[in-house]
Image (cartoon, rainbow, N blue to C red; front, top):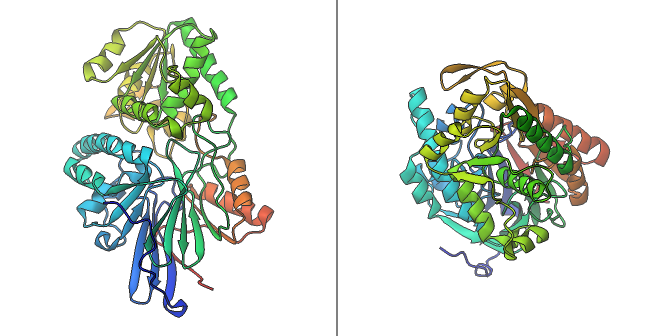
Length: 473
């Protein structure tokens, strides 16, 4: 299913008969559920391009909103372009296929390799949630398997042409392995979707690129009203937490996204242990998903930062060290409880809305010798957000759990651009118009006001379901 690299038959289009529109189907004034439909009409021919097809997430890994019908007909979608492999950007694609999609999909090589791994894990969590809540899951494993077959590979900087005057080019977003901003060139109008944008400097991947001559910027705003700590500050917070649990013979729990965040944490621990900053405390990566994802990182060194790539190619694995134990099977996960402290448990999901971390939290949160270190964004309603906001009694899978542990949070491990990163990127791109998406309303509107006020660029903050027309002239 290789897409042609050459121009399509030299056909022409009539300027008076073409139009461009963007439907902000999901992911507007919301962090998760990335899903945007671009329609390019040229007379009687319409090309429909979907940017991402992700899960809406909150208290649950797969919120009930994901069972609602799409606001467009999946059978009419020609192209799906994936910015990266996080579940809130790819996790609803099997439903799109189940509901009639038969077009083409594109992702970078690492994203294409990661998607089946991420979807396989998502299907399991979704099925468990659906059973517990007496819901119908939005799709099943056979839909996920079939969906993967539609995905072709895209290369950074190489233009794909879908119709006369309709092209897309992937550029490095600097967020996670294989992440991309997607530049659409439609009838001469250049429209850039950031997906999730990386911070500068990035921890593991090369710094993001700035595409040229962009007229319309559709930017994320997850941290549009916040600034991050530096990576070095967060590494100090991690090491301080390690020293606390060494002193108390306790447990350090780290809920971490299996894709990128876990690898950053592993690299930081590897550095600290190798340099003798902390002793070789037992570290458990209790995540089959994270183990598979880390293998993808190892197999795609060309998408990693130069120093990380050099280490890997030289046989020095930055994602492993002697005291690290990887738990894949359930009995290996259960065995962690029998290991005396001090110990570190890294498990997904990053917002504690699914995965093995919930079992560990149920066991260890009541213990005063436990430290829970939150290292990523916590969406409103999620278990992680409730703990971060100070809840001392939480419900975990139907059981009331007392949280006597020390709850800490640090954001310097984030692979997301913060307020200043987003402003710098908007300034460097220098578009004629900006749409702010993929952020809570407060964050999105705050960033919009700064872009309008400091950069003097017109800005809109769309609502879900709204459609905007892009002027042709």
